[in-house]
Image (cartoon, rainbow, N blue to C red; front, side, top):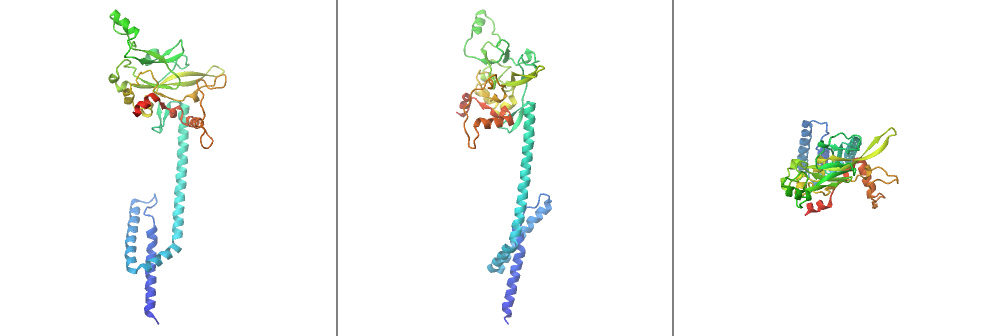
Amino acid sequence: VDLEGGDNAKNASLSVSILLTLQPYLEQSSSSSPQSSLVAKLFSILRQYICILLYALLSHLFGQQAKDNATQIFERIHLPAIKAAQLKAQLEKDRKAAEAQLEKEKEEKEEDDRMIQQNTHLWSNEQRCWIEKGETYHSLLHPASSLPAEDIPPTIRWDSKKKQWERWSKNLKTRTKAMKQAEAAGKSLPAFAKGTFVPVRAGEGWTTSPKQPEAEKDQIAIGNIRFFVCLPTTVVVGAEEEEEQHLDVVDVTDWASQTVLPTKAARELEAVDSGRELFSLDVSTLLLLDKKGGKKGKGGKKKRQRKGGTTEEEEEEVSVARKGVGCTAKVSDRYLNRMEI
């Protein structure tokens, strides 16, 4: 009887069994479940580390053949079950992540609907959040108009004859007629002599300094600079509940300084009371239909086809319906080009 051969076979079998016992701990993830305590997580990591060291030492002691045999047996018997458990855990993790994403999207949509209904905020693409509007100034034709003229910033005014908003456009270089008359009479210049008021369009945004309407650029205090935008608003009036369209001037300083450009940049670009449009919002979705069925004040747009059959205009309308006109903010090319230089 070959006793030596039998002993070798038993030793080989024992070596493979020992290595096979350590194998599951090598494949086990070092991270425990989220419910596990910190001590349990540390113990799991420590156990895996010890098993890896022990396995490497015993593999060197028992030889390559024992290591290969243990690996083959493990892959044939234990590995499929471990992989199945890992796959199940990953699928469960993905399911929970998908549910969390759906819940997040649901909450975001509810917030969007609430903000659109309240009409007190504007969406900022840059900040990815809603930012509250400031004071709203109604025209004298608006049913809710209640502010006395002195409470309206002096750099904007409502022209009752032309039925339009106007904003201040300063001109510090040209000597106006009022300046010449004051000089000839030896009088000091009246307020708002160095410039003129220009009409405001729906969707037009600008920056102004109501407290320093005729100051040089470097003299304007950052805290005195405000951002305004002209927005259409629809109100229901009368017993027949007819809809009326009015234009409001809205203070959007907080929103614009975080979305359009910083207040300091507006001053450096000489945009304050320049008379030129600083930024614009696409307010076509807010305009009422005219008698011909078209939207008042909306120019014709050429629809550009996208892949998938939708157009840029359709995609923008979907975005505006969800986030409001704030997501359409666009800096005027005049200032955009100067910012890129």
